[in-house]
Length: 337
Image (tube, one colour):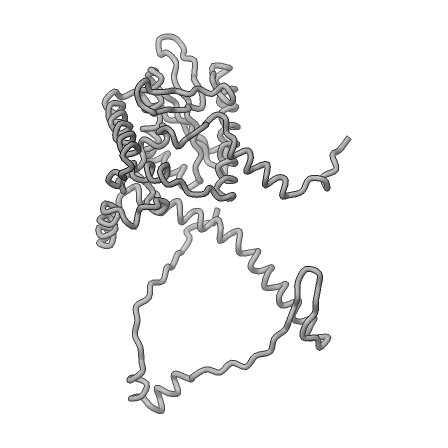
């Protein structure tokens, strides 16, 4: 028997989505600990996000839920590929804890090793098509590597497997093997201690522009390190992570522009059709159930600047005002996503 879909209101789906994101039993209070995915990013931004949390908007929640759903699907594909050697996924996911610090990790799975290699951790990452190609060519970014190193240090395991998948094409899949590095781990523990001290004192640590996406940090405007980096960038010096951030922003903008093009075209067509119908019947206004539609005639008066310049050049120069404005011009390369 088919369900009557008319009984399912879109608002109910939205409320279910919000409840699903708010009641994540696997990651209970993220304000109380430093996660492995955070330890490699800018500590100033992480501390600020926990001391002064901002509301999580519905679009962001939707994107996060979609990303998790895709990652869960990839985990199941990895399970099949490894012939059942994958453990601790989904509801029985591992939670790794540091014995003395509020420092935790939640790897996507534990891989049962063959022979002497021992077990390893699995971490699944998804990216856009362009970033997938970048990571394949240049390797994983530092925060991803340090996330896995944190998982290894907290679990006592010696290797980790990162599976990277393009969100646009699941056939684009790459794997990266990461061996445990005790020196990196010791540095991450120091960072976790610094985070704990900052959370206890309530003082924001120095900014780390090379580690974080400053555009989303609520303290970027008052961050001396970020402002210094901006001055350097004005001279053409851009760090690699900032270039990666710009790639993400430009790619998301290209995707939004592609989605908006047909909507804007349709919107213009509908307005012209409404206007032509009212003008054909000689009606200036009509009240509809959905909206009030009006055709408002207007007279526009403007100055002919070229004529003034020609007839009264001195007066034109006297009142001529010069100002500097900034215009962003973007030329998308190749086919849009």
